[in-house]
Amino acid sequence: MNIQESVAFVTGANRGIGKAYVEALVQAGARRIYATARSVDTLSNVVTIAPNQIIPLALDVTDLEQVNAASHAAQDVTILINNAGVMGFGGLFTPKSVETAQWEMNTNYLGTLSMVRSFAPILQRNGGGAIVNMLSVVSIANAPVYGSYSASKAALNSLTQNIRAELAKQGTQVIGVFPGPVETNIAEGIPGDKVEPITVAKAVLQAIEQGIEDVYPDPVSQSIFAAIADPLKAVEKQFAGWLPQ
Ligand SMILES: NC(=O)c1ccc[n+]([C@@H]2O[C@H](COP(=O)([O-])OP(=O)(O)OC[C@H]3O[C@@H](n4cnc5c(N)ncnc54)[C@H](OP(=O)(O)O)[C@@H]3O)[C@@H](O)[C@H]2O)c1
Image: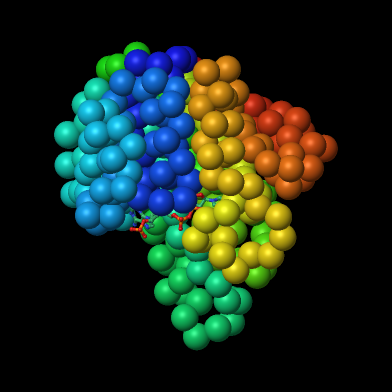
């Protein structure tokens, strides 16, 4: 699939990795980019990147009415980038841990599920296209320092595999992105080296063009997955084979 001439839709596009996706898509020659955020006012600094190509839209991914209104307004999409995400801190035995887990699960897992259900028919009509889901290195093992976030990203990893298998017949490429720490607001409290958001965005656009399913965009991610990526993929493919043809 070519980025040039594609029409992309990015959630959580007002800052961080979402804004970097918009920048990378403009650079790569995307024809149109729907840049979305909960408050459309927060997108003014993104629209200025390429005012003729970027269409700002208000979208909270946890609000099904807004999700369906957004897909109604964006019938030409060929690449859906599910980037919006939230992370809380604190252990499971702190006073607000259930509320935190619900917030993370509603946004990271159920929000992405609603987006995919709403946009899959559009991608099919437009030739198959691609879906990108923002996972994490903590999708494959729990990091107890943000345990309920890890659980929500593990759920999203499972959902990504499910979508990949179910949408194969309509020719939709489904990409999972497994970053380690990236220099954004969400990772503010995380120590150690972090890569820039644009590094992640560019690696993902390259993966779309090269038909790569899983993206390990930084040294932390690459070292964690070096020994396990192939065995994990083999199990995924085995289970996907259980789907009736
Ligand atoms: N940074 C890292 O180290 C890292 C590592 C692995 C994965 N990730 C993932 O990368 C993605 C992007 O995060 P980031 O690092 O760029 O962090 P960020 O700067 O905090 O951006 C998060 C984005 O998600 C949006 N968002 C939150 N809740 C939303 C909702 N209900 N509906 C729509 N948008 C919502 C935020 O918009 P508002 O301004 O409205 O809050 C913001 O645009 C997330 O899925 C995150 O889990 C990040």
